[in-house]
Amino acid sequence: MTPDGVELAVQLEGKQSQQSSLTMDWEPTLGVIRRRQDIARAEFRKQRKRLGVLSAEQETAIEALLVSTVDKISHRVGRLIETIG
Image 1 (cartoon, helix red, strand yellow):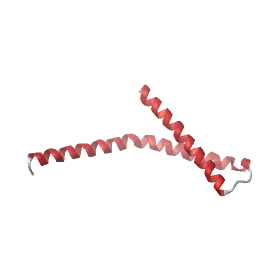
Image 2 (image 1 turned 135 degrees about the vertical axis):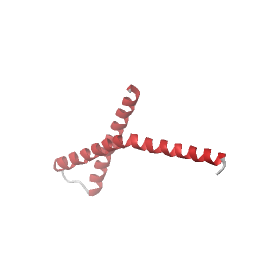
Image 3 (image 1 turned 120 degrees about the horizontal axis):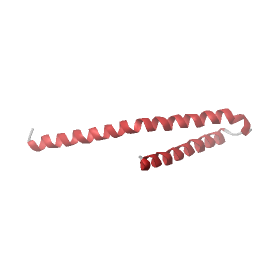
Image 4 (image 1 turned 180 degrees about the vertical axis):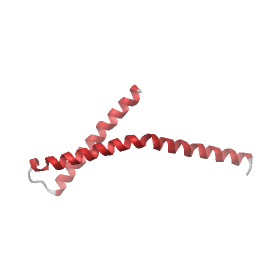
């Protein structure tokens, strides 16, 4: 392998290392978001009877709304934490 080839290989390894460390840094955050989404779904199931008769399409829309809201709130809180930290 030529010296240029060695340099290229080292650069590629460095980028892969950066990508995997970024992935590892986000894993706890993604886990928290997933847990919050699960909580939103569980709350929806608990409160479902209070909503009366809904079609399957309406149930799906409500669940999507709840999950989307959790994602947006989590994103804003995450940004705030990044700014403070």
